[in-house]
Each structure stands twice: as C-alpha cells, then as structure tokens.
Image 1 (cartoon, rainbow, N blue to C red):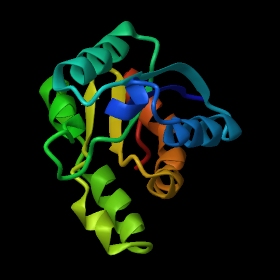
Image 2 (cartoon, rainbow, N blue to C red):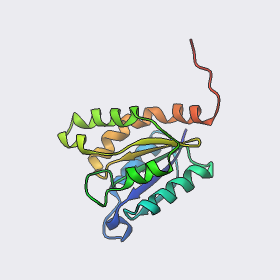
Image 3 (cartoon, rainbow, N blue to C red):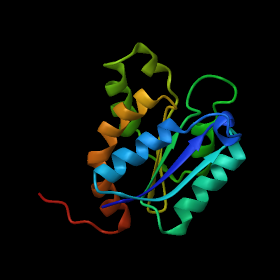
Length: 161
C-alpha cells in the first residue's frame, strides 16, 4: 500500500470553472488498487505554485508517490513538467517512455506530452496529461510500480541475484 498525493494543474479547475474528472479518475484507480490518497489539491498553471506544492508534499515524509494531471502539453500555460524538473533530484526516464508507448496505442497525440517522472527524497513524482482517457491509460502503467518504488525509495533493498 502506497501513500498517494494527487495534484491537478489547471487554471479553470483552480478557478472552480471545471470539474476535476482526471483527479477523480486517479483517486478512484488508486483506492481500488489498495493505495491511500493522503493529499489532493488543484492549483493554477503556475510554475511556482506547482513546484511549491510538489516540494512540500515530497519533503513532508508522508507521501510515496505524487501524481500530477494537466499542464503537460505544448501551450505556453503547460508548465507542469518545468515545475517538476525545477524541484527534482533525479529523473526516472523509463516511466515517461512506458506512458508514451501505452498512450500511442490509443492516439498519435500521446507523442506530444512533455510529462516527466522524477524523484525528490523518498517520493516519486509523475506527470500525467489532463485528459481523463490519458489518465486511465497512464494509471494502468503506473499502478503496478507503486509499492516497489516506495520500497526502493524508503531505504536499502536487497536485490536477488
């Protein structure tokens, strides 16, 4: 069981003009898989606000995985990967590759995401697109990884030969 935080990055969501269906989908998939959602928030597409919330959660010691949704595209307001990179300690390049490969099975537009995966302390942070369909596809990739990632980041792990 991993402790999950969900950050929705959306100007319209933060203003209350849009329902957070992608955040709802993440929460539903996580809880159905036995994980605990310990924090959830919506922030505007603002690089400083996104970075501050990610750092706060990662540094709190109470979150194993942060999943962001939204702000991964090509428009000028899509700054979630930039904010994530700004607070990152290490990149985890295999996760975005796996997410893109899964997404490309469903739409060629999956190639346009700029989402990244990083660690900060003992927390994994993964950017998913804002589309509920892309979130559903991405969660299928991510859910099997969470417990192993949490164990790896928590401390020394003996690997079999």
